[in-house]
Image (cartoon, rainbow, N blue to C red; front, side, top):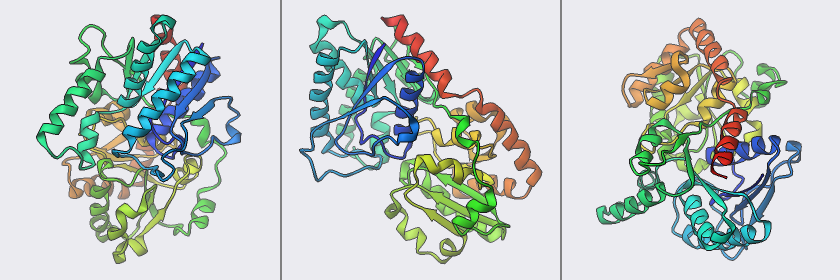
Length: 392
């Protein structure tokens, strides 16, 4: 089966959206599919150690000044997406895929346009929704005008109906999408983890020495985008609270763009009790997690996104402090410590509970490592393949 993946983003970058796109493609390739990814003009090449034949095809570099890799809307993306329509049309016409797999709302819309333009080819479309388009734009301080918000909500609702099949990465998002897809409900397709990534990692003491992290500390780790809609400010506001209560606490905050947290890292407490690792390569992630003691995910449920970082924490066998959302409960069950309220103080109490008890950390971490086996990219690819076959 030939799969044309539409990725309206600077693929590959070291963040959750790209990890989902990459890992789905790798897992499908292992099941015998041929995969081509149509994407923007910028982004890293796939490393050789992946041993993949995935063909990444990029639009032309007409917007040569556009170099934004972090998540979030940008009006220039409208031009990039128009160029991506052209690239997708060319690949669909010449490569003749069986399936167009459109990621994000933009990818689903691009896939729909190309599918209809080449209607005689009878190419099937799968829409892969990662979150809510309008909720994410609002979380990045776009769409402040109510009229514009309603317009984009209307567009989003139309896109939610597209595709011969649709999948979504979170339970929070499924219910919203299926209010539009009454006769063809979207199916849950969870993010996953590759447990093999966490095998053969160096001793925690060696990794800590490399990053100059005190050996005796309890290391609390956050990995991912350092932007508002990931809940990073809630965590950063919780750091001084925790450090005042627990002398043994040390934080590792790994991700980008670091300029988003500049005002925080100027504080004295951040210079002594926090290690910033930026940028963080996805392929270095296992080493960072394996030297840590506690994972923290401060994301709220407003954007209806899944949490790929949580699955990586689980794969590494870390106990996790987070907020009490449906997604978090479904992933973690008894493996999480859930904050009683969505505030820095609430998050600090949850993290503090884990700092205080090595035994609790071990119990919760063991639960998460076992549950990580349920959430594999291989299982997601098997489900995707069945969806492809059902609509073909």
